[in-house]
Image (cartoon, rainbow, N blue to C red; front, side, top):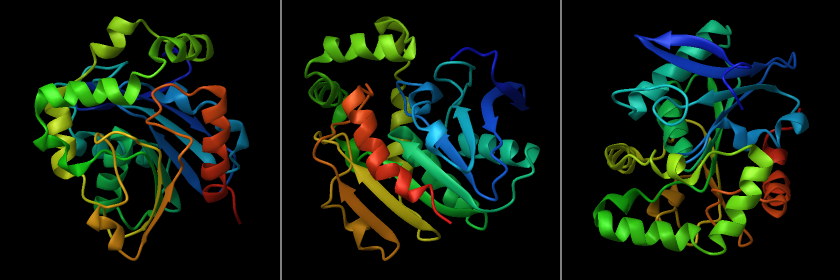
Amino acid sequence: MQKKPFKQINNSKYPIYYRFINNKSDKTVIFIHGLFSSSAIFKHFIKSIKSNVILIELRGIVYSKCKKPYLDNYVEDIRLILEKEKIKKNVILVGYSLGCSVANAFAEKHDKIVEKAILLAPINRKLKDIGKRNLIKNLVGAFGKNFFLKWKEYIRQENGWSLLRIFGLFNFKLLKEVCKETVFTDKCKIFIINGGKSSLFFNNKDKRLKLPNIFYKEVKQLDHYLFLTKARINIIKKHLLPHLNYN
């Protein structure tokens, strides 16, 4: 997606780009993408959703610069968008990877307006302990299988960016912040849909699953999907849409 269809507001001097799809519903779904992607990865699900939809572009990743792309800044960005669109309740957050940490941080701070959060492959909270060398090794393990075939399909479907640009986005400082802050809130319902096969990502042995508001589903057909191939799109729809479309 290009900047043209986006709305824009500013947080201090930095622009925030987002799309708002008004389906005249009393519920609003906010999609929050991960570190290596943009809101384009969610375009496959928009037509199937009856609620209003907000697609946010996280600053400092693809479209707009940000000196400190940390969770507090992202939380404030979402708050400003909701304020502009006059949305005060019945918000459903859908985060993927890094977006899970952003969604959880927002739900913790603004629990009165959040109904639930759906987390697709959250980041492992202990990731900060493995070091940069092992981090790169785990990235290769998570994304390496049939990498270039997946990349070719991704570019074809998303009008994607060059390989150099994607991997030039990686921010170790942001990752350190995310790992430190990924502690699930107990103030709203949380649904975890996990497919990570690497230690980079959430696993069902985490003690946080004992919280009564967390519901966990492991989908073995998925790995940590940087690339949304056709098969994965259908799998995600199957597990995601029932949490979004209901009366």
